[in-house]
Length: 325
Image (cartoon, rainbow, N blue to C red):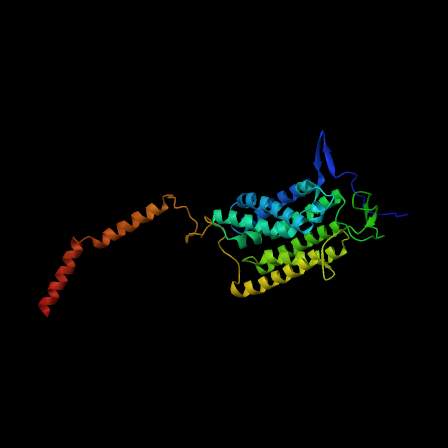
């Protein structure tokens, strides 16, 4: 008899009166709000304007959701298009199934569109959002807990996850890989925050560090999972994807640091210094006018012809000198 384990919800939905709220969708929504909130704080700290992150997220989030779903459906097409399956289920995103690789790739396209419309460098925006995205993933992974999916091999550890009998799953105790990945994402977020403060990462390197860190964890966590997946040379497809993307991220960090060291000083139009000025608005508080008047008076005094006793004395002295000569 097991004395300790993590129970799974009896239902994947939370009842709000007569309306059911899918736990998976709730976790995704909370994750998005956290990412926008914390990303905005980091963006403002970099010198950007409040609200810019939310404006660009309007483009990035829908693209990310579409891309994440497409990646999942394409790589697990047998779940929707094989014999006995209903292809309509491919559109039921609330039942789970978002591929992070597709979400990040398509989300980056949406972010690029939003940044281009605002005249913002995408790498700087991505650096600000990097740890916020990791926090969002940590929250979003709890949606798999609601759906009782993406668990690992059987285990008798005290933190084993209880899975009930259901379609395509057997009741038992399994490794809670959703929890492992959630905690890993929190660690990656903290790593990026620390490294960004310590080394002032710029030009997309903070985002690349997030990608590399996430891939390092996703590789071993993916290896523990027992759900059906395509394999290449004995390794799951997502393990290979993690390896390839990890290498690309590390190469980008090294090459970028050599070609473009430091970080961007100007990240958004209208930021102080963005137009070559010190950020003042040109308003007149009266002090400039007083200085100008004083300068004008001084200039007039220098240019007015000298008259009076002083002129006579200097003229007389000059005449006397001329006579003696």
